[in-house]
Length: 113
Image (spheres, rainbow, N blue to C red):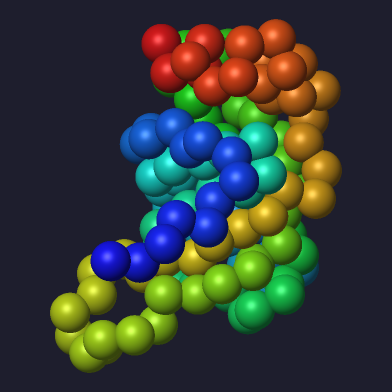
């Protein structure tokens, strides 16, 4: 059994995201997140340590959350034909005041409704 290394609890979500880099715009989905980072699934992974802008479309908010994130790990194991979407772990570098206030006010549960 693998030991849990996470320091912060994670919320499971299925929120659409838009990833913006100087080279491309990608669509993906945020699958879970904590106050420090998130798991993002998308067709094309970015480079390890790449920093990019991301908009998160949480269904209960009237505008997207704006984030600057850094890729800290990639899910590139397995056979390429098995993946329709691949995962990357991102660490939050900048969180819009809107999401920062939500997380600080009520750690995660308020974001899920």
